[in-house]
Image (cartoon, rainbow, N blue to C red; front, top):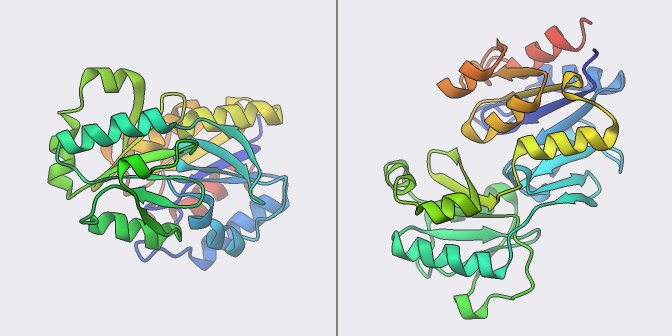
Length: 270
């Protein structure tokens, strides 16, 4: 069956190491879009952190979609949320208390702001604020609005500390939440129903398509779930070993137009 939807991770996949999209990749994606293929960017970022890339790819309108916050939200490019799996205030207080016990920096992201109770801001939180184009709000736990819908939380520390922290997460938390390491310095925590894979599956069902109509391209652990549900899972040449093992095809790296080459191979030549 023809591929109708191409789900593409951003960092390390669509974007080069300098956070750019090459001209060749832009051209190939526009060709695929022009023949009716849905190009769905899938990121841990909020919509604000994806908007400039959507614009460069010429993607717009309320019938084009983006998966944000690692699958906590599926939104139209115009910002309408059509699928939502979020955390609430009680989740926040539990996770923030855990971060203090583990002595890790922690913040949460809403659709508009980053919130943290850490007076000494993590440099990774500051970098995240820059990349996703959202301001940071320092709030003591008791000052946090109780009605917030929180797409994700993030433990943010140097890679060696994040690696050690993963082994210390209590089983009760592992059973209640979905933990995924999106970068060596980020351990994200989401609603148990939130993942790129679940979001992609729900979107495809909404559009009337099956796994055979889906191609997914990624490089990191947070991409595994969407590669599992796609009929054509593709790993970047720079992907971690687990992603390459799961993929049916390993394309070139993000510095070598890997996304463009995969789309040319599986979409534009069929």
